[in-house]
Image 1 (spheres, rainbow, N blue to C red):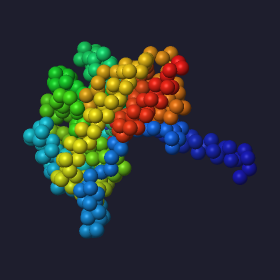
Image 2 (spheres, rainbow, N blue to C red):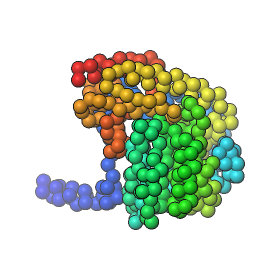
Image 3 (cartoon, rainbow, N blue to C red):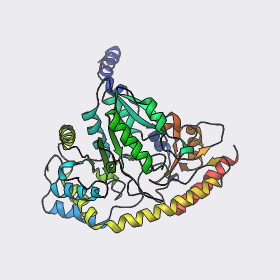
Image 4 (cartoon, rainbow, N blue to C red):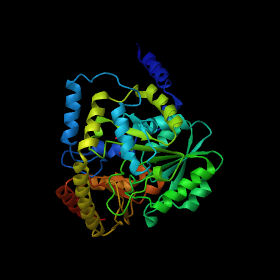
Length: 390
Ligand SMILES: Cc1ncc(COP(=O)(O)O)c(C=O)c1O
């Protein structure tokens, strides 16, 4: 091909991407991540630094050796669906196997749910700051994201009056994330009840992303499954058993018909969740409760260390987050969160700028404390040094 022909063919090829994909951006978190060096201390990533429990690894190995390497049922192997339903009895005792589908991660559960529920003309309420997937999944479904604000002064719980003012005839869904990423906030029972009532009164579905439900350090956790009827609960094995790379999660709802619809979308996305991995997840659920307790206790200790350190550095302020493994301090420095994250990266600490999680995230920076206590202490020393000169 000649030069001009090459250009023409390239232009034609570029024009082939869909409006859907052109309308979404790559996550702002990845940009910094790609600039990190091997000496950087990683407080940027949302994944536990542990390895999965030995029972889970053994479960996958055994399944593979026993020849369980084929396609399985679309909604997941029955034993795992049953174990999940039983686990969810802590929130809703009426749930059975048919209320649950096993998915290839919470990411896929969210995508299949959004695709099954929303379309052009719909509005979906989304937290700001909030996890990066929600706006993109809403847009890809053709619906419009409408943001509600999570403020530090409310310990990152939504204001019910603001929610009421945003609900209209086009509202088809509300995404809730408690315990929250990037906020670490956990919604109180009264907030959960108030939002559940709003969903009943206005006929929209709550998508309750509760992937951090095991990671609550003070007080109780209230699931939306305990109070709402129009709800899809999203969960994952990624965080609970530190198996982010295994890509296994689930969705559950009291509405079995809705689960059948989501399962249809799930079939056309992945056909079925990975078979041997499901046996690993099942083994972890049945035999690795001790593991969750140890991990949560380690995270609680790290949370206390990072909060104390941050509040002792001039210019940072944070309350003590109740859940997940993130802290989202505000800062007084005269710069954007992206500039601050960049400065910290130059001093060897990887963080995530608050602006990557929405407009209301500006003025904040997210640190994940899924790293060792020693690394957290050293990272905080570097942060202190980095901001001293500002
Ligand atoms: C709030 C929240 N939901 C969902 C996910 C995705 O989890 P999975 O690894 O199961 O896709 C994450 C991962 O960071 C998360 O923080």
